[in-house]
Image (cartoon, rainbow, N blue to C red; front, side):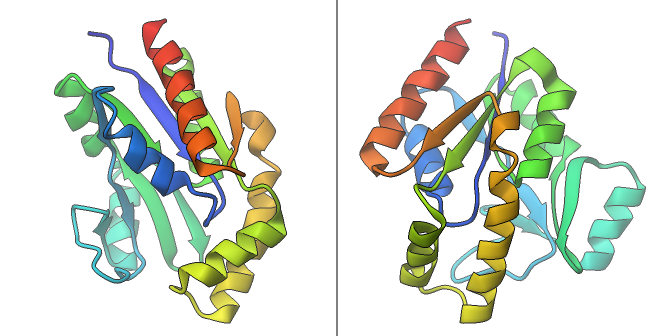
Length: 188
C-alpha cells in the first residue's frame, strides 16, 4: 500500500481537532501523528496521547540533533513540532498519516512530501465566530484568547497555500466535505 500524508492546519477553535477525531473513526486507515510541544498539558492531556510534552530545553536539544520534520516556536519557549521518528513509525506500519499542525508546519510538511501529501485548511466562518468558540470552550484566560485571535488573523493569510480550504460554518457539513476530499485523495 502506498501510504499518504494528510495535513490539517487551522486557527485554534476552528474545529480542526473535532474533524480529525471524526475522520479517525471512518475506516480510512488513518493514524494520528502525535506532535511534540513544550507547553504544559491542558486538562486531562497525557504525554504520548495528545502530545509528546517536552521541556523547552529538551525541544531545543532535539532540534539541534535534527530529529524534527518541522517545528515552530509559536510563542517564546512555546514550541510545536513533528518528530521524524513518529512519522516513520506510522508509515512503516502501513497507515496513512494525519497531522494537526500550525500553518507554517503544514506548508513545510507539504513541501517535504509533495504530491504524497494533501494539505487541508479548516477555516472559521469569521474572526468573531472564532472568538465566540474560544470563549465558549472556557479553557483559556482572556489574554490567551486575545493572543489566539491575533495568531488566527496571521494564520488565515496562509489558507491559499493549502490544497483544500474547508469553511467550518456547519460542523456536520464540514465533516462530510472533508471525508469526501480524503476518500478521493486516497483513491488517486
